[in-house]
Image (cartoon, rainbow, N blue to C red; front, top):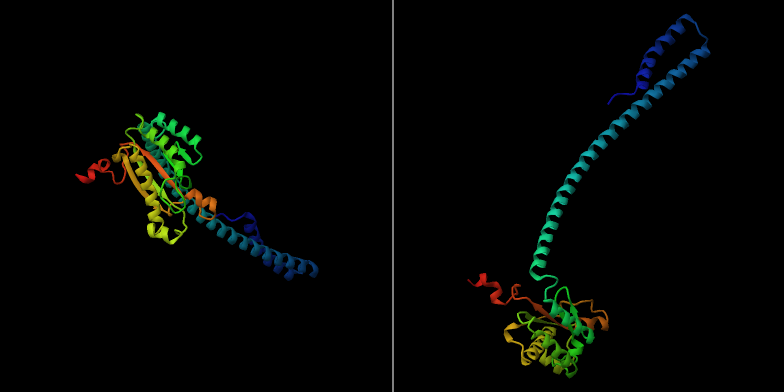
Length: 274
């Protein structure tokens, strides 16, 4: 770094001023008061020189710090650029996967007529919810079952019968039906109930089986049905209040296209069994 001109002038002044002072003293050309003034000026120049030297050192240190920061920033920008390219690649992959899903399933996972019928059915029955995006229907367990029981209540049968009629329609004929039982996190109450259902795993499975049996007895082909349970371990909301626990007590029915791989359906994983 080039030093400032003021520093060079000050250094020359520092060298010349003592010689001038010597000449003045030897020839007695100036009075003592002026000589004192020259000495003061010399002292001031020395102090100014020290200040400039200190400033120069500070500027050098600051310059090195800025250089180091610049190198570090360039490294961070390079890392951000690499991550950005990776994110763009992932986004492109997601876009291709989404396009493939739309190509295979169209506007939704179910044939449009089936989805419309299920949506209309859900509007008529408060205990039934239909998710158009996933093709899943959720039935409140409190509508289907009494507390800690797995027998379907008479009040729920009309709703299930209409649901079965949709599943037996031509548009829904190829669809598989996966029934999943869920519970809240409370312990099974009553010794008699616990003798039948020792824990929520047993209760969730029994309720899913009860719905499956009802569909089968009403004429739905057995080879379309699958049953599972997650017990208390897949809540929709935290089990912190009775309304929340009621939401978590549910039976979900998933309608699945035949070409979609499903764990346990051997024909959808033919490569595993070759």
